[in-house]
Length: 465
Image (cartoon, rainbow, N blue to C red; front, side, top):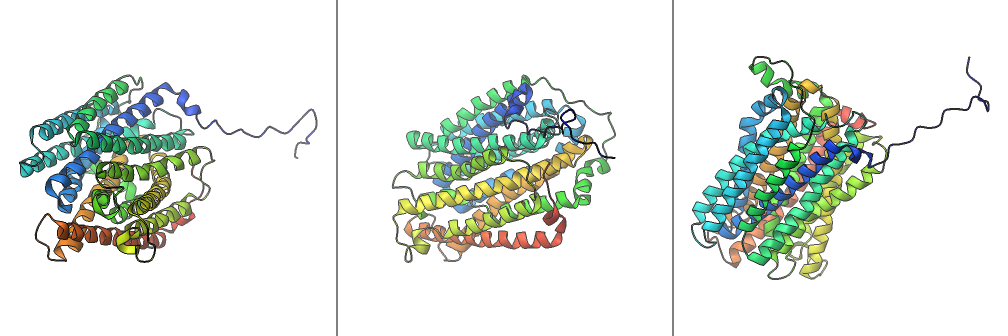
């Protein structure tokens, strides 16, 4: 028998949605978020400056490709122990230790860049830079799973999707300000050592903020370290087809479609902002992706959870691939005969396409990160987060290596150009970079179709909550 609605028995009022920014009343989460922003801001400055310095010293796409390789190798070697450590040791202590190592590596880059003149000892600087990048790669491999699992303990389960959205937003904001700040410093000083020194300071600030977080990870009872315990994260991901499918989609999309590593080549000669402002142009291009992502963060924060998260993710990755193809073509060299435009105009067209890539990619980030955390029990979150970091981190770094190598193959190697300087070499590098980006974007579209066919669970996944 149903109750009758009367003035004395009114229907319950509809549940009101929580305020989009209510989560910032949580002091621990706020400290964590600021620390993440500061640390990521400094690291984005460092990577931008290092890409610029290596390209200026070596004038080679291979030099940029080895940056990704140097960061990727530690991920393969350290992911299993990093995940195990995040589940069996205090996660806050792991974050603090990793942050300290990152600061020391930045100090090493400061000394290497400052002591070696720009036009001398190119090989010595490259060896030093790649060795320190390996150290940074090790520290980040241990930091990422501990940090991802740590944030779930700072907020309630209902707040987790919004916390992940703002966590992504903080990172993307750092990606806007970091490359831009690095570009301005490079423009003013014509060097990169000051950028590395600033990151030392930022690492110290992030360390102090994490110290102030009151929550401590409750360490579970110790269990013997075995091969079975180490591979638990991989087993869990393989058994959960939704997580496996979303990780595979994101990994191969970024691996094939990422153009970030080649931005120094685009900013230097393909779509220059204006003569003599390569550093500013590079900073703006690198900032375009996170600018688009930040716009997406605020859009998602003011909306209810996605109702068709799986289909939305597939569509967004497809748009990412299409925008990447257009980015490779949007320049005077490819479309100038059809759409005459000044170099500056082509630059802003490319900027808009990179911003679109950032916006749609952020949807994929939020969906994937939310699913990994809410579908994984806490005692396995460190190891599963390590697998997530391996998928995403290797796709970023291996994608950078792939972009650099293919640009070299499609450019100087294919055109049989042996000199490493001069207008002929620069033209060959430009051709190689354009072909690398366009082919990669086409590969991303193919990946979307394959993943949608192999894992229909993703197409059918509904509300993200």
